[in-house]
Image (cartoon, rainbow, N blue to C red):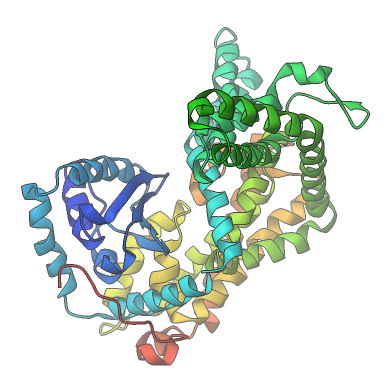
Length: 507
């Protein structure tokens, strides 16, 4: 599985389009750091196995009408641009040629890697059915508020780290104030962006959500007294902005159904901002400020007091949380910590789950090195997915290797637990390791590291955690993974439940 170049990105986009039901089945196109994110009108028209088999596709994550195609950093932007152009020019020669390429991928002879991919698809479908609950749907919508902010968090985080290095080294004193301003502008106004995205996601007018959320960061709130104390600019942070925008959306919907059409353009925005604004000042900011402070205090206390044990639990359970879709609840917590402290101490610990996954995949690769009948295709899958895994994109290894094999998923969790305990142990000694942005993990997190003991110490502790996760994940999988037996077992013996038959496009 090769990484698409800039020239092959249009071809990959053209191959993906018919496998998600064609242009008429795609209602929205977006991307994050590694994934092409599509909203499909009818998910049953998409062909997940064929999509997963395309060269250049590292994984597929489905959640109802939302489909995410994992392509990797850099590539995803080029493919998304080409994909948008194709959806706007239905019937182009490139789009018409795509079904033939997809059919070629579909008719390839089944291999060991293909059988494991089929098991992964069954497990994914089972997980999708279990995740179809109101709570998990709400978590997915919550994640949709924060995920679009990740590129700005990453960019500003890297610039803040670079500026810190220059300041500490006494270099370019004329440039560092400008770099500080560029890096801090987004973080100073992040509640506004949260408000815009919240209103957009929950059916309100985005600019009204942003207008109400802007109250949170307004310097003038220092003159307002609520519950006997003066408010502080930024009090409540992103949680306050989220709640304020939700209140604004509710107020706007209430007004839309009651204000006469002739006065709607005047009264609805004014009443929305007034009601939600006063609610934000005299309730939300105070309550959200208390919650945000409690989150920061609890996170620091957890690692400082029970660091090794907390790291063990968090690192070991993160992969199962991902499988259950519950990891999305952590996104606003990470963002709150970054807004409040400048970095999140939880992300480096949770990133150790990816290190355990990488170690487990390497152990599977080594275990099958002498098995020509089974090992060749599976080793090819691992070689293709491993670079992405090292950079923190774990879905290809999870769904293509460890989860279908069974035991390697558990031993990968053991590696994550060991790496998390390593970082947690140093937190108990007073060495906090944090990340200035969410999204990247693995090696990609190094430029975004921050802590209380300097970048050198912070990077060394994080690297030690990665090596621990790699080592324990490898050792436990090599010794207890049961790789050969699981890889040769028939699909029915390992899948939790048979997947329902779904119609596929192009057949």
